[in-house]
Image 1 (cartoon, rainbow over the protein chains, first blue to last red):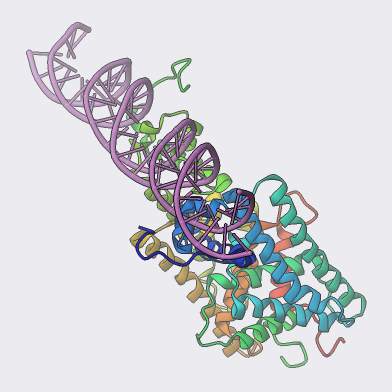
Image 2 (image 1 turned 120 degrees about the vertical axis):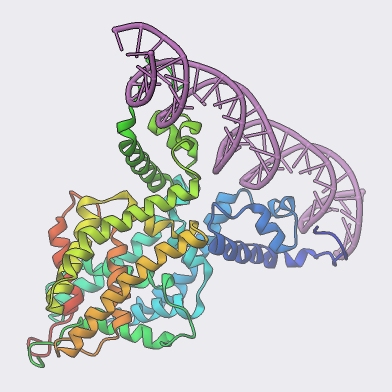
Length: 208
Length: 208
DNA sequence: CGTATCCTACCGACCGGTCGGTAGGTCGGC
DNA sequence: GCCGACCTACCGACCGGTCGGTAGGATACG
């Protein structure tokens, strides 16, 4: 099964690479089949290892899922949140956040993010709470931005929580329908969604 | 286990009620635990039956899931789509659709709809295709409405597909965060989302 | 009316298979 | 010679699903 030609043994130096490889492969498989339908056998086979070989590196399936999600949050926070949190102007900050978030899930398409969206209920207790706390931080960041936008007189009277969750819904739904290489490029989609959220679908009273 | 006081036997006439009860209970359990984590034993226990007793009424776990989703689609089409498809004015039709859809998932909160959103990947082949076809019908209906809105000169230049999926994202994300009895009533949420989608968050050039 | 017959709804026991996880050994590089 | 990486072999639990059997209401017949 796994046998056949004996491949060369890994040296010690490759340890961190092995860890990353396991995270990446498991993320792909959990993403394709779903966490519960994917067995640790599936993961180990995809890695060219046995199940026990994988369990040498991880403690449990649930902890592997947590590690994947935590890495997904790392990615998001590094590539989006920290890039925009310094922007002073709330409108520019919102635009950059939306654009960065959309491009992250369409262009880079990290499987870890999809896993976060789809399998959050599979985590229990402490692990679940830690991921949820990081999600909540993002929501508070969005709400703060919408509040500043209103205080600056630029925004209409919109509820910051509703606006935040509406924006999150738009973005987090993308992986359900958008396929790269289609009619719209990733940038076009990002711009279209920003336009929609900021201006709405109707013409203003001046143009109508 | 199931034993104890022997309850009265059901007569033939109650058959359709039993079927509905199984659908409803299974929907609740699949919704709470997730389709894969929920066992048929969980479902049968919740019904006060044995596993074999449940399998007297259904053919397989997957077919049970399909029946739940099909019933959810029935509910949605009956309570939303058919109520609004006759409305001539596209703006009014869009408003009514959004309002109806939001109120369905916030006030009635049918577990079947949540199952449709969360477990669509668990279905394979023919079953999956049938549910997807009904979803696609709804998307086409939305796109048509956005196109009419643009043709009537009311809408800004927005991509009908992007607008449809953005709207779907907003609505289908609601179950992830909205809890009834909170700060916003169901009607307030529906109105706020309609306002957001139609007008956007920014003030028009006239008011700014 | 009585009763033989049929059928629906259901149960207890069980099956083959798969799951997450582990104990203990082997092998190769330092 | 030690240690980390990995494998073979295996475990107990549980899964979806089935089977033979049965209680008892509905029905047909006398």
